[in-house]
Image (tube, rainbow, N blue to C red; front, side, top):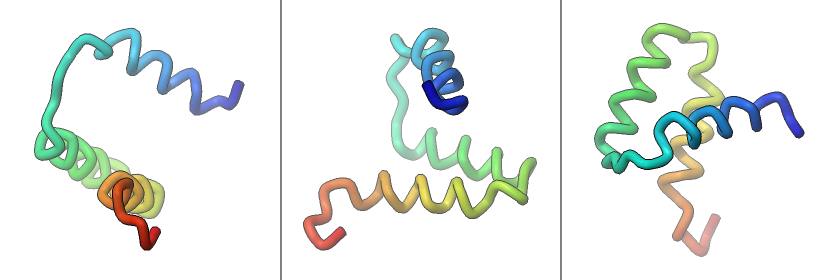
Length: 58
């Protein structure tokens, strides 16, 4: 198990029954980057990956 898997598992356990919008997720990611600017690149990569999931070019 990767270290990050624990965080993902915690997220699923604590919030797995909730429904959210992508607008809400985008707001949370922006708030996180505002508080942790050194993580901006990783958040940007994740957001781009999520945005392009259905894009056959990527």
